[in-house]
Image (cartoon, rainbow, N blue to C red; front, side, top):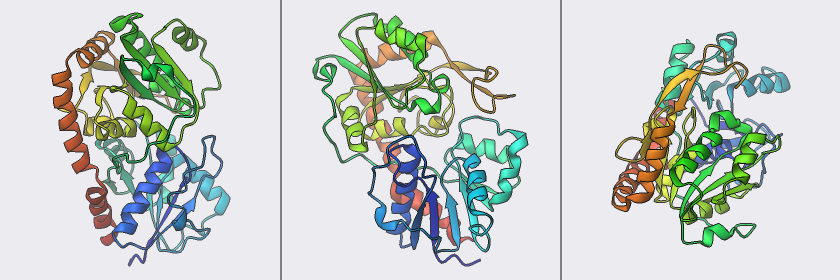
Length: 363
């Protein structure tokens, strides 16, 4: 079929990674001359919806002959139930779905019947989708833009003014604490630095409503850990990155890991699990890798846990990586420079737009 333009369907105003996926893709297509409109969905989000940078592209109608669905695959069922088959009929439908596990649940493979092809943001998700679906799957990375806007934080954080080495971890509690693994990070940080005020850890989260008693006690017992449970604008998050010295993620699994790539473009060294979507850009040259092993996802620990595995970061390896990062500025700088070069080249608007356009042109 001949594509006359693209409808991107996703949470365009959302101040979260999914919203950034929608906005950067729209900007890439528009800058490449592709007629583009955005249909805001899902509208019911617990995160703030204050990013209006792409509002000029938003429409209540699907104007063009190609749909790209930029939200979780299971939300596509809700979309179909809400709007029926009409949005899909006579259009080429692409699922650009985030996914964090190496295994897709067999009972839900029927979701692919709603789309004509699937885009995967990393080699990790590409492998999962290719092993799970009969529809064609293509690797279209996420776009990572160098942050240029900075905004004062809503509250004063005294630790950010202190002369200490600052590690930062940013996560959404809605993405589950067990997958993001802040407790594993706190244990490793405590073993590496004890209660020393020369090094601090900033845990920036949001949507932390169902309090984890053990996590709260670990934070309260650590004088060098700052816990922030508040929604920040993108520009405020950028400033938090800028004021930190290094970024750390001891995740069990990530589909892509946008925050790590953004940290690299802000010139911050990254300590990270050597597993899942982030290994597309996290390697020995660009980051401080934490070793570990694959383990079964515990029953009911995560949606669709049956038969799934994920990463268990080694405590000893994490402690070593944190210490090495903080104690060796020369090595840190080497990795920072290599990471910036790689991410700025491989995940730029121009590079990803070329990949996306090649698929659209082939339709």
